[in-house]
Length: 94
Image (cartoon, rainbow, N blue to C red; front, side):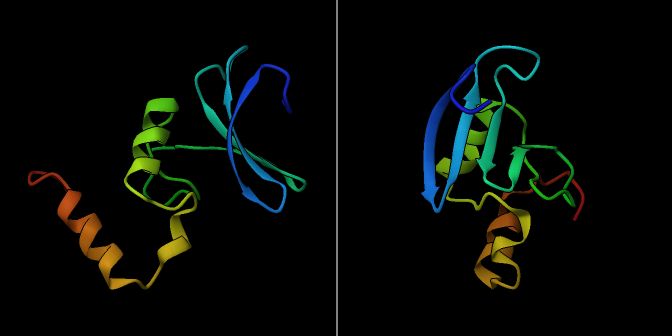
């Protein structure tokens, strides 16, 4: 996957990169790669390691809102809990 069939979106440094896959069955999805391996963004499950809407649009929206890549990155931050509560649909689960 490294540079073959993907477009580099950015890096967090320390050998961690974000790639948009442009060919094959994962086309349109964003993956994080590092020396330890690779993991896709977006699984829709709220208890997943990387919850979110799969695909480039879901990742770009997530990134533009300043959300962390991993679900537990802001665990315990009351401002994050308030932000998430404010974004829930009014008719959705509480």
